[in-house]
Length: 135
Image (tube, rainbow, N blue to C red; front, side, top):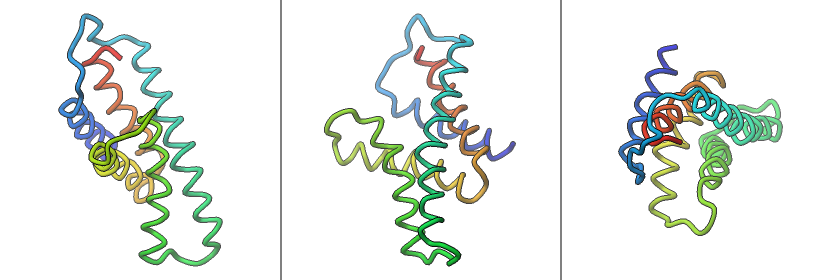
């Protein structure tokens, strides 16, 4: 529980700092924000991270990952999750910030701790943003 709340709060505050939107009249807690945050957390962490991590593990077979394989597996887990937030062409700077600030921490949480911690932290970070910016 500590990993989830700690990572979620830190990444949620970072998300607020990087957010370009301003607080509007819809700011505040609505139950729909919780469901939207859960949907994003579950969908992106399971589809983009867990599925691709399982693919990497299947390709590697019973062998333990070396450093290069670990790097590429993390990259495979992170890039689709980050790229979905850029509908068109993205600036390389924005892409790198999103990758390092959000993609990598969530992927590492899943890799080192478990899927539940990644989903929980992601949900909390999104919930903070939804409450502050009004979705």
